[in-house]
Image (tube, rainbow, N blue to C red; front, side):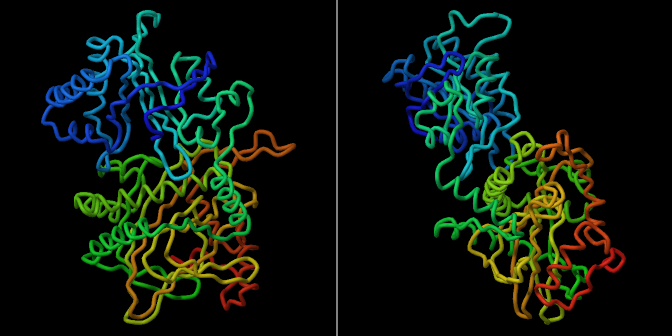
Length: 486
């Protein structure tokens, strides 16, 4: 987080200042949270926490102390629902035993590389534990309730006006050190320069149908590759299945399974019922559920999911998706181990993905990108690779072009990939960017129809295929009807 002194803004009163207070961390990844998770019962965990709190209060006055926690954070790949009630009881005990306690700070957002990602989960249960609605007033309550949720100025104003609480800004305050005066004047908030540049670069890449690569530093690359090795080792025991014959007639053996979540920063779905309702490919989904039972594989998947989710948030913001729509989008993650077919070179034929965005991590060469100007490029494997899909092309009314790509596998090559398929909620009207004369414009998202149309000789992608084939001098049929790919 931002250290001991957070800039806090009451957008209701617009007072500016810092709190000279010391927070006790119960947030995600903290030592105290780990102690609670390892406690056999809630009472035992509560006792341990208050033992710590008593020791702190003996050195620092209660009016200078606060507690900070992340009630909806994923812990070891799942929401720690047992901590939900625990946090409420902690707040009630603090109110009862330390009435002069400075603040209770609930962090509802997830911190990614470029953005704080807001959550749709309600903090009302924690607000009410500190200031019950039945009281009807906050008079006599000395403890401030503070919330963090990646707020926009409008959302911050709404939260403070409705709940009468303090609002905390994290990353936004770094790029806007004068945030209070900006909010008071109604001036727009700025991104950090590196974030603004990245969003601009993503926008330019997707407008031309190119990929965008999020580079890693050496430490992150090492951790990513170690995680990919764990996935590759696990998939090594799977029975291979032959890929479909693509536009160039190449095939490859694949060992694969998939996972899903309700959205970015949500834990993986963990029951057969959830998996069956998410996708019709139940066999590979159940294999994914089994993989989550392996602690090493689960840890690696959780880390890679965080890396991919971070890139999806940045790309979504770059293309103009609003915060509410990003939260409604679903994510399916597939892990794949490629093996050459019959010892011969092979691969996956040229295609754009059918979803909104794809985020890829791979541990070896083979991905090739075909630009609309005839340039062929291999992005390599030293960063997370983001590509626009055919749904993005349709939703943007052609403003963003899909990324045409293929995968080549050498006869002795083994490689592992994980790809996150990010998509709109299915069978719903999705608002589009409003241009003059197009108020109320929307796009109906029907993924089944889109995938069929992608393969149709008269579909919306037909002209794009013609350009790619002509610019790259490919010996491919102009369009491949769906029957040929069955």
